[in-house]
Picture 1 (cartoon, rainbow, N blue to C red):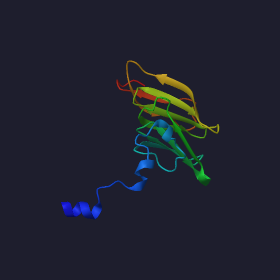
Picture 2 (cartoon, helix red, strand yellow; picture 1 turned 60 degrees about the vertical axis):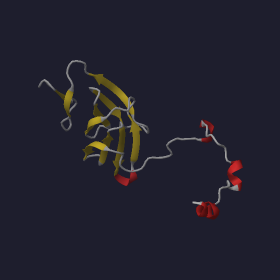
Picture 3 (cartoon, one colour; picture 1 turned 90 degrees about the vertical axis):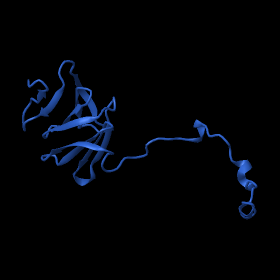
Picture 4 (cartoon, rainbow, N blue to C red; picture 1 turned 90 degrees about the horizontal axis):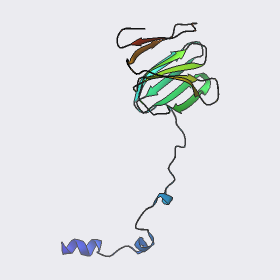
Length: 148
């Protein structure tokens, strides 16, 4: 053991006095710089063949929209809930997301930054499927009890 102390030494390096012993919040500036590609833990996907875009949702509430010619948009649900299903309303620039807190969000994708147009929260029954037929003005919500 004495042999190892002689080799490696017991003294502090000379720069040890210049290093602060405790780190504070002012030592860090943590923020997201950019997002690229698939979100972490993707949970659902939707496709619009007319506009040629794909929406990918994740368990953390992130949504990434990928499209032709390098289009990529990233946004996060307000409550950061897990997303169970995404439905793109064909050729309308709208996205419907079904989340684990029994809510539906209608997103407007026409603007530069997507925003929530409407939000529906269900109290008694939970939605289990959302469908929007092509060129329809309606979307259908299937509930756990079997009603639509």
